[in-house]
Amino acid sequence: MATFGTLSDRLTETFRNLRTKGKLTAADVDGTVREIRRALLDADVALPVVKEFTGKVRERALGDEVNRALNPAQQVVQIVNEELVAILGGEQRRLRFAKTPPTVIMLAGLQGSGKTTFAGKLARLLEKEGHTPLLIAADLQRPNAVNQLQVVAERAGAAVYAPEPGNGVGDPVKVARDGVEYAKRQLHDIVIIDTAGRLGVDEELMKQAADIRRATDPDEVLFVIDAMIGQDAVNTAKAFQEGVDFTGVVLSKLDGDARGGAALSVASVTGRPIIYASTGEGLEDLEPFHPDRMASRILDLGDILTLIEQAQQAFDETEAMKMAEKLATEQFTLEDFLEQLQQMKKMGSMKKMLGMLPGMGQMKQQLDGFDEREIDRTEAIIRSMTPGERRNPKILNGSRRLRIAKGSGMTVTDVNQLVQRFEQAAKMMKTVARGGVPNIPGMGSMGRPGASSKRGKQQKAKGSRSGNPAKRAAENAGAAAEAATPTGSGFGLGGAQKAPSAADLAELQKMLGKG
Image (cartoon, rainbow, N blue to C red; front, side, top):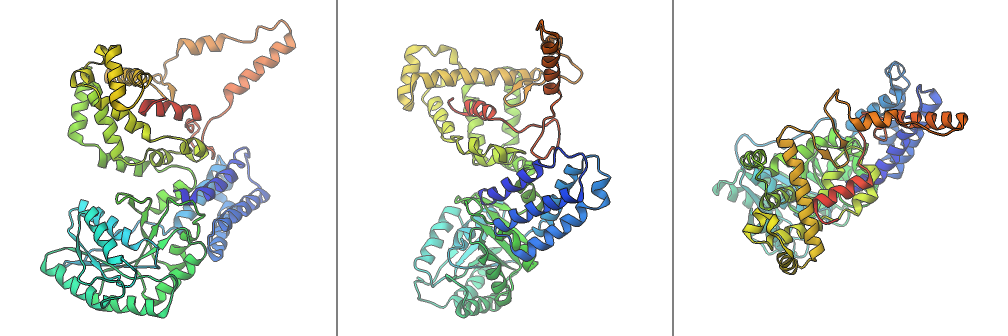
């Protein structure tokens, strides 16, 4: 989501200024809409889309739904969120499969947009869903394009049809047609056709793409567009729509650092839904596109649903039950700790997962400094232990810790810190297993509803002891104001929630790796 980082920062700052206003005037709305317009234009969103978007936001923000709201600022954020979902396509649209296999999916786009890599990612995703995809190498123009597709297909574990060497040799239309027939004979239920691109839109490119479409009659034509190409994204999308008429859009390179707002315009300008979003270089870095979730990420409201789905895919239910039994009987060991770390690694980048939490846009610098390699270092230390040492860390004396440090390439201090962190984690998990509420980093002490702590009573009873009456009254008033200060995200949504601080992130990293 780095592509929309700047836009997210600008919108977050704009809405933060509304928090202090109990009632919004027309001037407040106009000022907010003006800042939103500037943020969208700076992010390369197409001008017609910006005009339509800000017009609808202004009209609704001046309407009764905001005037009657208990918190007008939150209502404006909700309006912006809903309108942002609308320009991103409204509802999620999944791939359409043919009634009679194979389902033919044709990829189109400019050279360098990421079509070949996306072909491998899509094949990997469809295989996980139980399909048997076949990749067809119909890009015979770009140097080594056929070889690249073969390498990507091998990494994805998918079959590939590549009868021609490429590099300008062969008829791409014939290859595509024959590839579909080959898929029918070999009982592949999905066909993904990788077509040629150009550095720019030209007649030859469009003619070839149109000929392949007529020859194969695809069920889906996916237009792959680089999220970082700027304003030219809209013109390119229009040209391909007129020349090939695609059925869906794929946003690639969303992990880049360009402004990328033009990609937000494609669905609105073409009327075609965004189906997939590529968020990294790995074959696993492909997500079905959810307009509502993307809008929430842009507005720094988090994406908890995607985070939950990733966790469900990574964690095995049977293993989870075994772990629960170990926690209940207090048999949690370093071997179990290692298994949990490996399960977390299956979910993907920790930075990416933390970025899905609400309010984390305000912690960008801390997230950038989060070192994910600490999990690997922790894993190396545990793997350098004997099975007996993993099951019973209490036997780790000085000589054993020195041996483990040398075996893992770390220091004795690193080993000591790991053991301390493990004991903390085990203690917290035992507390949960017994039905207690642990002290979670970033959440503070979480007591049961209605329960009052002694510390709270002591703090409540404690006040200024100054002998000067005026000074004592001022200090007590300041303390009361501090206690009454509301907490929440940058938008004032959910007063009880608070974005993790730099100290919270540091504490989390200590739990996962070294401090």
